[in-house]
Length: 83
Image (cartoon, rainbow, N blue to C red):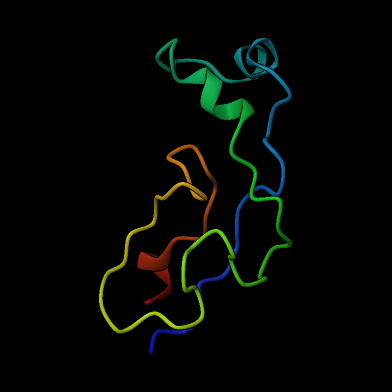
């Protein structure tokens, strides 16, 4: 079994809306700013990431990070850097 998948990153989105993100960040494609106002984990940093199916019982090897409960714009720890 792999170690449990842990939550990391922002618990809430880093910006409340697109205009706020655009006021601070620059140089991004215009359609990317929406991702800076979504995607917070809603979980404490270091807690088991319940958005990943079977987060505590994953077999060795790669696993899917995105799902219905973990969409593309979600913040997550970097499993690549953990190993």
